[in-house]
Image (cartoon, rainbow, N blue to C red):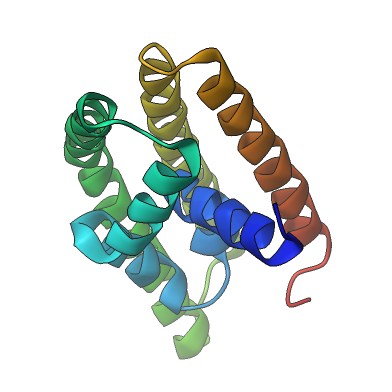
Length: 158
């Protein structure tokens, strides 16, 4: 697999997993995530399906699991978006209470942990219908995603 294709597939997994790194960076983060869960991530889903080589039955299972996950995740993302907006407004107004900001950050972090858990559950359920080769590819993608996530958190903006 070429480096370019590997990076594209790793990026697709990053979108699928919707890590906190994307949600926490800048005002577009939660909007980006909301768009993804309202169908904006279709291209990334297609690339994941293609990379894993899912057959029609596996693809149908994946789409069903993804729809179920979206039902769970959308309210969490909406709550996270609200927290982000309130925090941003308080900071812009110049009257931000540090304790309240800290409590909002903790609440947002907890919501994103739930989102990550829902994504992990989707991948775990998906793996039950994958072949051994597909499972290996998925694990490799998850490892690349984790490395990319660590780099993004360690070096934001790079």
